[in-house]
Image (cartoon, rainbow, N blue to C red; front, side):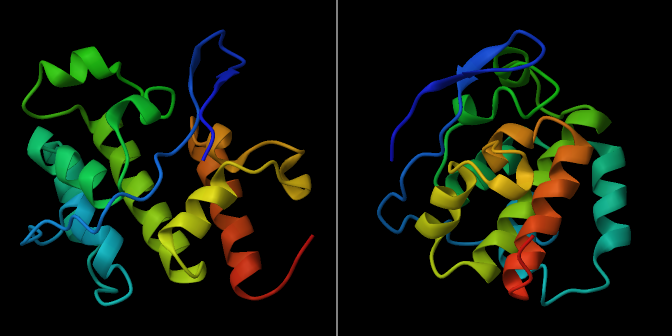
Length: 166
């Protein structure tokens, strides 16, 4: 997959590509309700939302963020424009702010949905990096810097799931 930089409306420039799928490196055990657990189990636990809200309020632990990144075969650098905190400031903290924690869980839920809808992780990541006419010819990944963008991308994935194209 190609990596490149994309200009953001806020003047930020960063890598806007998701790493290609690495060899099947899976954490041996996922902590229940962690962001990585949400990617794998969101369909299996429909009542988990209240626990996730509590975890967002308490803050995502750095170890849980690292586990998520590993689980989705990505790097922190790829999410520098998605998260509301800089990667360097995140590396200094053991627990993240409520705003950063919420965005981490949004990433986890979106990737869980994408992995359910697309045939492979690679297919989903390729879709994220391909401009979409229904999203104003923007790459879905470039819209993930806001909650509204997350909602638009999620809605597009759901339309794909049900073969309802705009």
